[in-house]
Length: 165
Image (cartoon, rainbow, N blue to C red; front, side, top):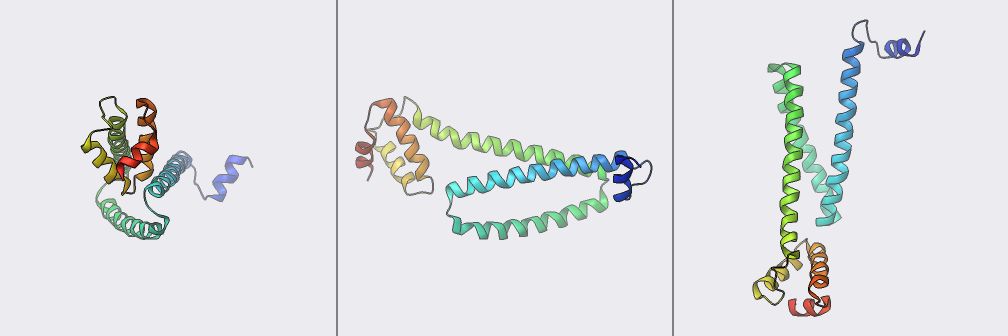
């Protein structure tokens, strides 16, 4: 008995089902990889903006959300064919990746504006904006942007911080 036949016997795969089972296993593998990458990135991004004490609440909320999505999926499964459902799932995943990417690009655009040459470090509105951001969860990003700004403008960072507070 060959390796392939042994696997089919262990998995109780009948003749003619091999291709379908292998495609479903491949689909499950890539879906699990996507989830693993998503949760790793989401956790890292979350922890850069919020304290770790909020993490249990996020996991509880995610669990509740996943239960709701799973029940909705089960309802769709009763009325829609498997092929259409899998295609819809892939399209939703692609759309969510696109939306996340656009969201990150939009969030980074604000910092690119701060790095631009049109920013005046003596401008009261700019100093007020930076002051408000220093009191937010994004303080680390503000300090990084200030590093970039100060290097490009020949300003000492501690002098600028002295004007902010």
